[in-house]
Amino acid sequence: MAFLTPLALIGALVLGPIIVAMYLLKLRREERRVSSTFLWQRVVRDVEANAPWQKLRRNLLLLLQLLLLLLLVLALARPFFLTNGIAGKNLIIVVDRSASMGAADGTPTRLDAAKRQALTLIGQLPDDGRATVIAAGGQTENLVSASTDRRQLRDAIEGIQLRTGGGSDLTQALTLAAALTARTADSEIAIISDGNVPSLETLQPVPATVRYFPVGNSRDNVALSAMAMQPSPAGQTLFAQATNYGPNQVARRLDLYLDDQLFNAYNLALAPGADQSVVVEVPAQVRKAEARLVDTGAADALPTDDRAWAVSTLGEGTTVRLVSPGNRFLEVGLARLPSIK
Image (spheres, rainbow, N blue to C red):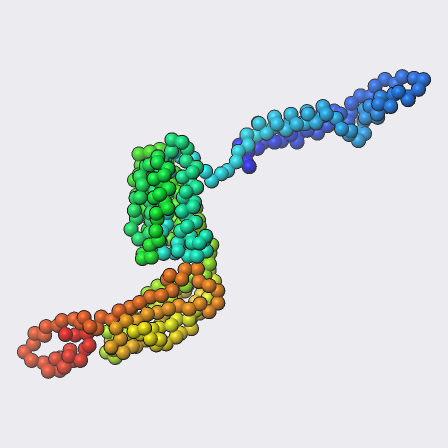
């Protein structure tokens, strides 16, 4: 809870002690001689309470006055609460569905957590509010545009599926969202993502309030970020690269399979944000290669990016037409290249 006029709270600090002091310093009553105090015990207690600086006794009037002072000060201070609700009537929801949203640190995945957050935002819309649902990841899609139908919005959110190929292009999604909010003043954009996207600070400003709802926890994730198999004079060169996207240094084992048979294994040690590559020569007759990352310690947050494949291009070859008056050495050299037809 916060206060729009916090200086009003000073009034409680000033007036509160004054009210209490008035009870402590109340004037004594006149003394009168009586024949007996047996029937005057209550009067005696009142006299003691009216003596200055005596211990306060329970007094309903004093409590009511202090309560009234507290309510008055709170009204002047204008308290308010910060919530995660939706203030605008035109809501644009951008849901990240990229491969990293498949990490199993949600319930069960980050995408499931993002869907629940989106459904919560739909439930917070005012009665006359409308919403647009945009799916980012791979190709940006506008699933529902400016709809007041809650069922249609919920169905669109629940139907969002993970895209394993490509990253999450929030720039494109926000460009679309900005175009949709350009003609509506009371708009709000909600981005629901795990943060595995380019920095939000680098995105272009949009004419609406933009709020970011993070999902998922920061966990170790090592991915096979690149893999290729290219022809070489000795046969073929296989290239595989692993990248550590997590915050901690991790160890992994990289297993290479050639035509579904284990070829070799390599131990990798990757610092946060670091890459490590393996380059190896393989026989020319190999048609398919597969790389697998094996956990040697903590479980990986996203197992789907721990495998990659590469297919040989030797069988296709490149057609070369030699135009020459006759060069035996060039003809023999080209003929020995496995990728030349």
